[in-house]
Image 1 (spheres, rainbow, N blue to C red):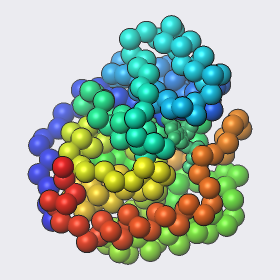
Image 2: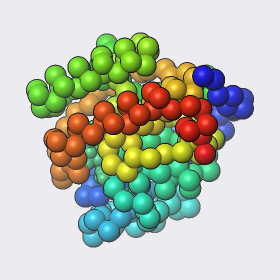
Image 3: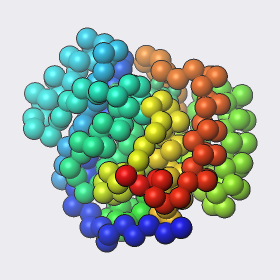
Image 4: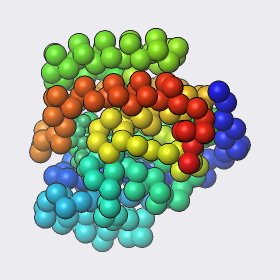
Length: 247
Ligand SMILES: Nc1nc2c(ncn2[C@@H]2O[C@H](COP(=O)(O)OP(=O)(O)O)[C@@H](O)[C@H]2O)c(=O)[nH]1
Ligand SMILES: [Mg+2]
């Protein structure tokens, strides 16, 4: 199956930051990215919801005061993490878009590396991998570590791909690609959906090593049992035609 994504050019990037309870972590994320690569940033799309705490909302306003127009605050209409990302995908206007978290578990000092790869290869997806040399997990639960490994192997065989990390929600896409796909998931499995659907379309994916380190403030919105829901979209997408994947 092959999808003809028109030839892309890197112009600037939109950065999606979903926020529930992050304060200093969110602030640090934006500061590090602005210090490293301000000239390539088209906008930050900070996605908030009803659960977003008043403290986090204060930080959003402070960031807007400090950086101005490039900070956009988007109130999500679809629920959960996947819903936040999907609303942001519709909204962004940079040539490329980075999906990440605002809790520093997607280390913001890597943004510059994603951008430099996207400049070299504007038609592909560049994704973070915790499983290749230079990547890794710090303070990750040992049970999740084992299940994660088995899950990655299982789907790399099913999708006949050498990719080592298909569930880490840290990647850069050509914006036109994410806007042309029909998305389904609303919760965390959305992160996996954003890799398997492009793969099924024949889009090329490159990995760069990235270290995951547990946040030291706030807590996760995901529960352990929900990790098993990732199988559904992985299996379903395997049987989709190009027409079923695209809008
Ligand atoms: N706007 C919004 N952000 C969310 C939602 N769920 C999670 N996030 C944010 O998405 C990022 C990743 O979520 P997290 O709960 O840390 O998941 P985990 O790291 O996979 O356990 C964090 O920055 C969260 O604040 C949601 O429903 N809406
Ligand atoms: Mg997290």
